[in-house]
Length: 215
Image (cartoon, rainbow, N blue to C red; front, side):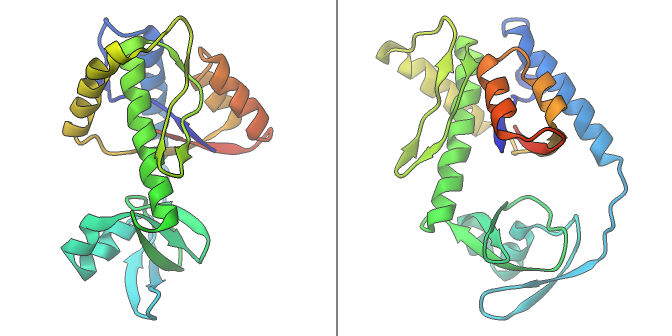
């Protein structure tokens, strides 16, 4: 389950709600702990749709690295990847074992979904920073995306220019997406200020299981 997380620490100031800085701090704490955990960086083989086999290293080589090894033009076009015929994988996320790999462009159905979902995350960050409301859901649609926001927030056409300016600023900063896998109870702690997110976590993540959080 994907749950939008947080802006970078550089984006946080006293002008923004406390829940943002608290969420950032917890994300950074978990990220540092997981980065220190040992990984089995063994050689792996990545098989492409045409049968070509690329060599890689587990927990280091990403789908983007594979695309770059073919051509920069291809790397500029991919938005995600699909592993073993079914698992959609972030282009920047290290591969973990031998796999078959399909590189996805925006024109691919799954690539389009990833692109719109990623765009929704950017919109969600902009809405939190501008309006301080509580985010609910922000799914990809067939041709676009949206993000629901709750609390004492009313967004009208008069706010569009302000929101678009914030989105442009976020995009210009080229913030990398980051992903963590966290236990259900940690996700609940991270989003304890937001009744919408905690309801999603409670209903969709089984007890004792983990979920992914992105920023």
